[in-house]
Length: 451
Image 1 (cartoon, rainbow, N blue to C red):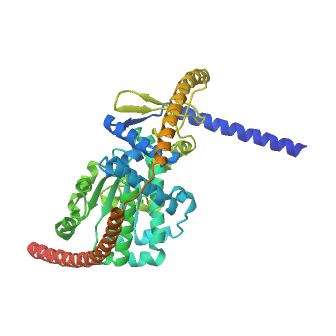
Image 2: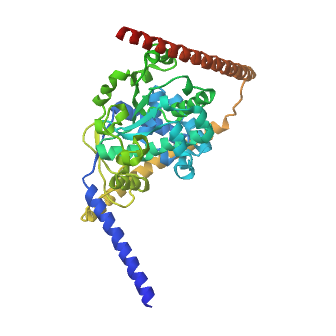
Image 3: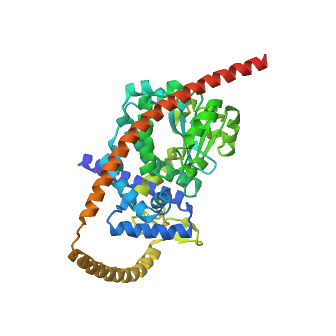
């Protein structure tokens, strides 16, 4: 009996501790809000896209998000038809690749070895609160990298990190900055970049990553800095690379020579910047800056808020004007809020029960009207579907021949593109070789002038 009594006391104690922890969390975050500035025209076209996807049953609840829809619209120049196609391709890829559950399902055991041969990682935030992603391209060794992992496994790791950024890092940055953060800042360190960093394996890996990023995670980059770029890179490689980039992407990229690292401090505080990029941070106790994963997502209180966002997503939105919205929280219980609105941990004071009961009665009358309207629309849609289904669909023979011919031409173009890709790779390798020679020649001339 005494053992059972002690267990009961322990359970009650644990329950009290949990309630105390939740109450403490609510008290700490009751005034927390996130400013979300939106364009009125963007909202209209996002709503139109959302309705189109709902009609096609192509909008899973976990992806019913305003900012995600807007990103795909932007990359397709706000063309609804093209965006729907890109969106459905993304859903198909996510299902086949397992992207929805990759954070928990995939274990990248070789991470420590990979970062030795391809140093990269997240470190800090810029002055606007965006997470900073850094790669040291000049210290990458593709051959050794492929000895410890494969292109397929590294691509899964890359997608896993992207999902963590979208589901954990960006929400954490939004909470810390008290404004909606939806994009990242990237720094590519080209110090030491040369022929040793390029190989067929590297080209295949980069092309696979680029395809995933452009097709399935569009418009997530706010700005990119390519730093420590030598004379050859700035005069030959970068001008050639710009021919393969669209003007919008080029406008986001800034190439800095070694003497211009101080420009990073205009957008990033020195405490958030590693010492090898002109900052003061070393993360000595974490094994270096790129291994530290430094950022607001490591703050226990913010991490708890982000976790609760995933469990209880919807919120109440209070309008301040036509373009700015402040997201606040209402209760610790799951609530039904507006679709795809920015999410934050629900909080409430102890005296909110009576207010909630009143609002629920008001909402019930509104919901009845909405239900009746939806039923009328469903009846009309059923009638239209019945009429459409009665009309047989016949493809003219001439159109079938045209489609067959088009598919054959597409296959031929794919073969030509593969050949062109091989030629471009060889050309790039030659350009890099010439660049190294020019750099060497430029350095010799500089030494002679100094003498």
